[in-house]
Image (cartoon, rainbow, N blue to C red; front, side, top):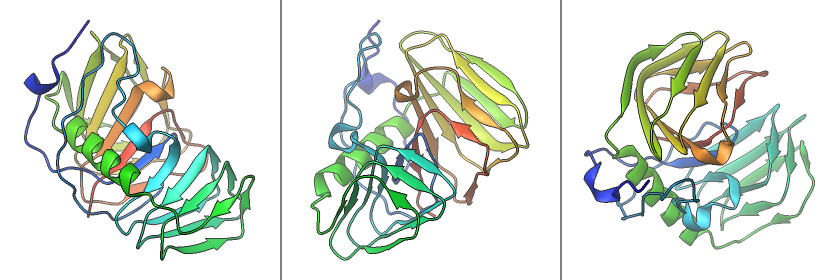
Length: 231
């Protein structure tokens, strides 16, 4: 099933931090919108472009702090930002640092730490992807998530808008579609064993479009790619 990309847009400011499978706090700036193709069936739509290889990508001055987490894949921080890998965190991959990035590590990195890397293409592609995903008209809208929900998708892409996510536990279970886009416009606070998942993590995109702090705790699980808005 093909969903035309340019017929499901709404005006929305673009987002900032790209995170796959794990959340890190950051403050990031806006970037221009770029056209990206919608997926055909369950084939990878390529929304993330050259940003796709990074599990965590901090852009435009982001302060990325990894505390008591395990990251499966590469981590990158672009020019002007900072990256802290705190013990007992572990990065199961390489770390890429743009020019001038402040880096601190007392946790573990299984790969190499590479300084003075040109991440400009990845940053541009991440900003374009987040802007595009935030522009999609929702198929389902919720004022809040405070406990377990099952979200049944329909078609190739299901777009869900949520006001606030404040969960002390329980699961948001996703099913029945190729790709999910979840836009959260308000607060985001996950505690206890709260989780979001149910489908392949590469098929879920979570956009935090609000200006409040996103908070997670040890024990949380997020099977998704993340985008964090500027404050």
